[in-house]
Length: 422
Image (tube, rainbow, N blue to C red; front, side, top):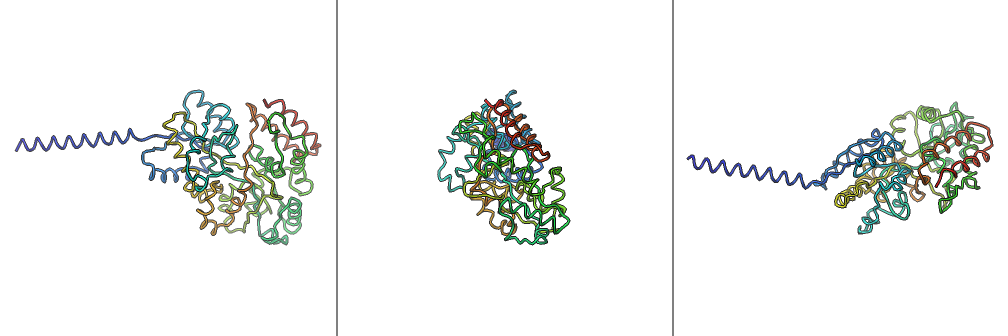
C-alpha cells in the first residue's frame, strides 16, 4: 500500500515538474515587444483593442506598453533621450513630421528588406503612397498607422439658411468666401475659420502642396518660400481675412467652441476631429464633411497623424516587430482606427473593410476620398526643425493678425530658415 502510494506521489511530482518546465519553456519562447505611442486620450482604446486581436493570432508575441507621449513633439524628445541612455522601445508611434529626425539620428530602422520579402503586399492594401509618407534617402522607415488630412466641416443648418444644399457647397476658395459672407448675412453666426495654427505648420503645407509648391529645392539646399508658390500660400492666408472675413483674433479653442455650438458655418481642420465633433454636437444640427477647397489633378495634401516606426536593432526581434507593424497598419488595425477615431486608416483596403460603417456615417468617408492626394508631412533637414517650425508659425500669425506686407514677411522668413538648414 505504501509502495503504491509512493509511486503515485512520484508520478504526480514528475507530472507537475513537467508542467512547470513546459510553462517555463513557453514563457521563454515568448518575444516581448515594448511599444510607446502618442496621445493616449485618442489612442488608448484603439491600442488596447488591436493588442487583444493580435494576441489571438500571435500568442508567442507579448506586447508591453511602456511610455505614452502627450504630443508628437513630446514623443520625439523622449525617444531621443532614451537613445542616449540605451533604453529605447522596440516600436514607437511617432508623428509623421518627426520620423525624419529619428532617421537622421540613426534611431529609426529601415523596413525595405521586410517589404521586399512580402508576397502580394499590394493586394493586402500596402501601396506606394503609404511608403512615401516615411521615405527618406530612398528607404522606408515606418508605415503610417492613423492619419488625417484637412477637410471642411459644414453646419448644414446655417448653410441652408444661406441658400446652400449639400450639392452646392463651395468647391473653391472664392466660393468659400462667398459662403462665409452669405452665412454672416443671413444668420447671426460667423462665416468660417481655417485652423492655420495647427501643429507643425501643417495647414500651411496644405496650401502650398495643393498648388504644387515646395519648401526647398529637390536637393534640399535652397529654401523656396520666396517663389511664386510660396508667396501664394501665405497670400491665401491673408486673403482669408481680407476677402473671406475670417476673424484675425480667432484661435482654435474659440473656433471649435463656436462650431460645436452652432455659431460657425464652416470649419476647415483635421479630419481627426470628426468623432469628437459628432459626439459634441449630437443632434443639435447636421454637419457635412467635404473636400479641401480648390483641389485639382496635380494637388497634394500632407497627411498628419502618426506612423509605426521600428526602433530595435535586434535582428531576431525585428522579425516579431515586422509582424506587429503589418497587423497594426493592415486591415485589422484599419478597422479599429476607422471605427474608434476620426483618423483615416491609410491601408487602401480600409474602405472595403469599413463599408458598413461608412453607410451609417458617410461623413467619415470624405477623408478616404482624399487618398489620391496623400503626401508626406514635411520636416526640414537638420537639427533646427523645431526652431524653424516656430519661425514659420510666428510669420503665419503676423500674416493673419496684422496688416504688414505679406511678401516682405515671407522674404524675411525665407532668409532666416536658409541660415538654419544644413
